[in-house]
Length: 365
Image 1: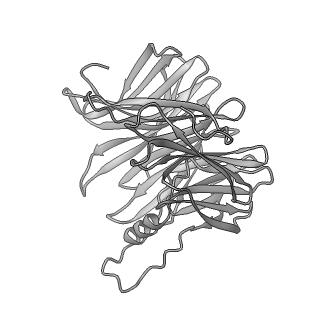
Image 2: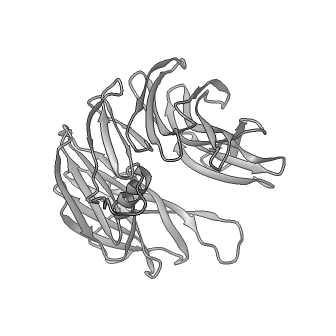
């Protein structure tokens, strides 16, 4: 879009094209407005919707498609930034043509942000962040039906934010943030919870706050749950993320018992972008460090977390940035998406890479 600064946060496939959500900025509205764009398969813009107003900053974080439209989760800032920051959670239902069917606001504290939305049997579940005071962090979950009626809501009184929601096949929700996970029942009650960090808080530390302890735990083992949640056929859950130069994987039973934790070394690994089950194995895709010419690694794991094969992929341009997301496609293939580090252009761009895993090959361009 010429003459605008844009921030894209999420993209989904609509079968006839794609919908991108985020925020848009211009000189007339420096605070930013929520943005939704629909494009066809060839990249032609079909429609664009700017929601919100000039007095309040707003943005969408996640989209989920349903049969008769889409749901979006985001926030509206009453007072953006600083110690007096105030925001309200925002849930919007759009029709297939982009017109607003309904929108709802959620507020549990001084700062309330809707971070993720997932499809349920009754409609959608929305989770997000709550901040009461300077360090009083917690989370919330709410369920709406397709008519916009709030079915129930729950304020999760834990010192953690809720950044993702993964509706489980057997019912209930997997949710959490970087450092803490929980499974909730269909009414938002905690069935089990688990902190996967081995960090032990030192009471002699000068900075004593829930936020400082959480940050220390996150710095030791940082998970990207949104990209690395695998629900196995027996009901167990495997989580994966990046821990320094290693991949960290954990398997938990359907009742929340930790079965195993594994720190897996993959040479040159700098990020986990996606993980899923393929037959009786796990597939994982991630980025390599900037010094390596191969920009993507792929790995096959057993269900018990043991490495079976690793492969590096040589892309056409070594100036590619880290991949942000990887998804499975037909057969045993994947697509990876990321930002390109252009040397001659000031405007950023996006690169897409598609390949089979093909672990028998040494390199594939």
